[in-house]
Amino acid sequence: DAGVTQSPTHLIKTRGQQVTLRCSPKSGHDTVSWYQQALGQGPQFIFQYYEEEERQRGNFPDRFSGHQFPNYSSELNVNALLLGDSALYLCASSLMMGTNEQFFGPGTRLTVL
Amino acid sequence: AQSVAQPEDQVNVAEGNPLTVKCTYSVSGNPYLFWYVQYPNRGLQFLLKYITGDNLVKGSYGFEAEFNKSQTSFHLKKPSALVSDSALYFCAVRDLGFQKLVFGTGTRLLVSP
Image (cartoon, helix red, strand yellow):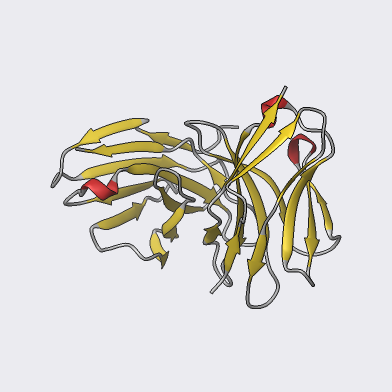
């Protein structure tokens, strides 16, 4: 049973560029959440997708957007990259119903130069 | 708003000794509490959760956590530490009505041989 997968593993971009990160949830899961983890910090919630809709959003600007596909996979898009967007981006999957824990992927390390 | 605090940036313990990593929480209503571990350049791995029931929760890799409502604490414990337990540990609380996790700042555990 495959766990949560993310691609790419690492990414280097320059300021002003746009980036797309991808996530495939654990088999059977229907909900995907995205988190940003800056160096030395705990993960910060960006947003959550369920039934192809954004259900909850954290304190992140509109430059951060996402999408969920019918197969429950998800993308995170960041426009007009800033140096401060450099971080580990984590995807987590779960079931919307119940109190199930979130399973995290290995993350995508984004470096903005 | 839900929040957790991890008062120690780092905990040092000798192999074979018991370990405790501290977490306190602030929530409205009943808390859903979690512990995750992060190894270098890796995503977060779920250790255990408290939803309801027994105050002592058993988790993965021999870890357990004690929920204390009067002290609003959820400390992570292990009777005998291993060098391989050295990692970054995060306490988290689930947001009411959603699956958003709010993380603490993390505690680095160093187990010396």
